[in-house]
Image (cartoon, rainbow, N blue to C red; front, side):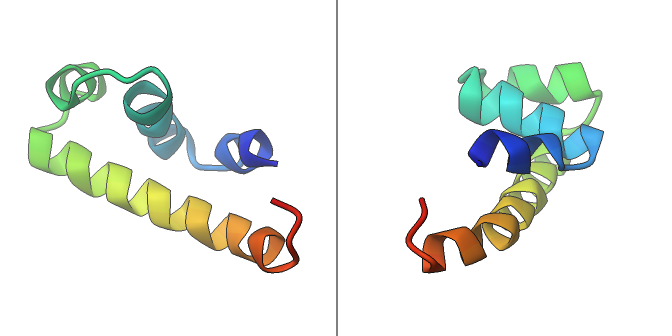
Length: 65
């Protein structure tokens, strides 16, 4: 379920989440790969996490996750 939710994110958000939260890369490295400032990378990660939360919230509320 989580993997499906991540795969449904827009590509730029998906890449940020995978690099930072799954691969554990430092923010500076993720920013370089995405060709963004660190601030821009933080914003992208924040938005991606909000999208994931929204997608997974119904599943959590039903007790399936």
